Length: 253
Image (cartoon, rainbow, N blue to C red; front, side, top):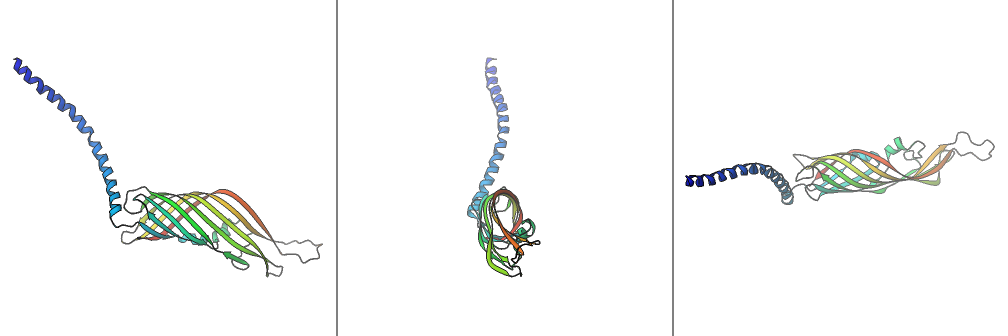
């Protein structure tokens, strides 16, 4: 009888140990899932390092042509998530600013008496992609800086409609800190890409606006020929918000 009890005791201990080990094994299953996600990301990073894929892109923004800015953008993937985008170009006539945001009285009359001076423009941004992919595509967030400068010389108009040799320099300088969100898509059959974006910016403006005023009621007591136009320069410096919405097209390689 004592021998049977001694044999039963180790058997009960073994059963209890097995029952206690079963929940521990069940709790270990989620850890294997986390390891699987981690291995997938490591696999994407490894493919990015070894596979010949798109890591560079040249882009143009056709909508900026209406703003008088013609930049060429270059993007370089640093990792499968992180890339840097830089651009350089020049400015010309800003048609949108002239038509909608000049506030009236702008002296630029689309050519006559106006000399547009091309100025360089610079862009630099750091981009973070929110999806794991071996190529720079998908949803992203970008923090960047931009410097844009528009300059033109305005000649004064004489009473007979001709232009004098007196000039006034109209200058508009913008320095932006931009936060953009967008989606970049590479073509499935070629290396063409589309980059749609929008965002906000904190803009530092340095302005010297040339205003032209038509004098309709000159001084009747004056013996001199009255001037038909009066020119003033309005310098200012401020910080304002700015908003962006655009699309870029380019080629990856």
